[in-house]
Length: 545
Image (cartoon, rainbow, N blue to C red; front, side, top):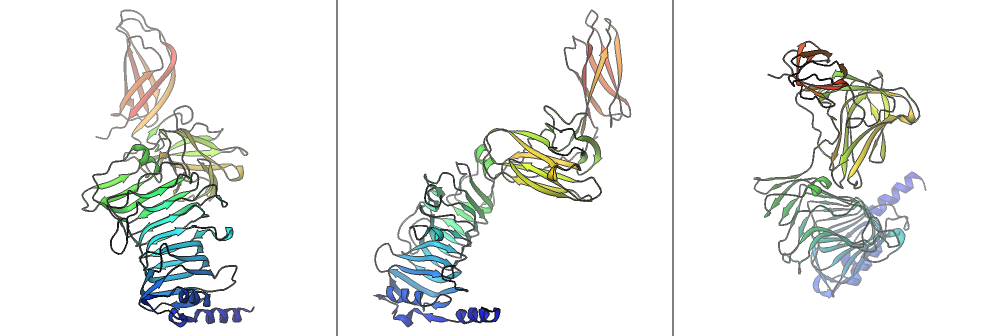
């Protein structure tokens, strides 16, 4: 088929228009119009089916095999409802979309029909009313039991269910939809969940991942109905559940944190009414961020964490040793590290790894309990040109392109729950090549999407470690040592500590000149004291007033 004939075919099919009344529908609310509807739905695969305004009594009606790879039809099927009201011909009636792509349904009011998806892609439902939406209620065919990239716009719904037989059902979006949990406004009964994820992990398709579901705007209310906003069924044990509520108004209930791994729920820029001031267990705050206001704007409800669990990851404190137990780096893998003034918060580190092969450097933090986690790095290339490094975060690896002229921020949130205990972030060469970078910030935080927090006072403190062999000090005598501490200035505060027992000596330290600290030891113990050789640690705190 040439491109011209193909375009002509699409144009011809798109221009086809039929109405259900062409097939005998009465629309009087008394006559059973089921056969007329199904005949109209079967008559074309692409084009427009018009349902004139009226009340139609229908049973199960089906749109099947439209614009999919089996039918080999190119185009869209539009079903225009014009505000028509469809009432059930019997109990438990269904409006079924089966093995369809590119179907647009608009302006229909179904009082008691269940909307059933049995393999539906790229479909939009607009300005419609349904008490129940089900995805995967029966086995249609294994290749057509998935539901992706579907959109509901300005619909009035009670509950959306991913049922036991569904395959993966990703990227479904609800824009400005209204969910009502209790009876009224045409709905005949209460429901307890706005969303149910009941796909059985052991079904023939391995269950249904429900990734990237977005509920944007709209309202979820019903104090006599909903007991929870969503529920994950007992048989859905390992499938991904990913929900984002953005700009939603909640009445009486708000989404709770999920209790199992591979489930993520985010609440962003939303409001809530008829709930008390917000509190949340720390473990829930670690797993799922919440950002919403009470309706009167009097209380901000937030559940996020920004605690940097990397020791000195903001580089606030200078030190002579950055690697080892209790330090920022657990293993430098022979890389050379040099501290510099400047960067973003007053200090940055140059990391020069000349080794090739397995050359990654390691940073480790301890998570307080099971949680998702977020890593943040700020770095730039130190070679004068762009370079690519490989960053590993929680078992996932990313190629990270660094500019030599500006700092670049890398952020990665874990996709699964990490157990309490040690987690690592690594920086290595692309394909194990040597690398030379500047690092201005590093963090591992418990929680998803944790904020970047930098210190406000640059070079606030400075650590220094020195091994000093002090001779025996007689009773009543004073001993003085001079120590070079880079960055120290007169007026700074100095603390000194010894790595052993000081045996009652009085210890004083002060800055005597630029980069120079004096250590004074006075013996008033009544006898001679010999400390011999040992490590002395100096903490210089910069004066700010």
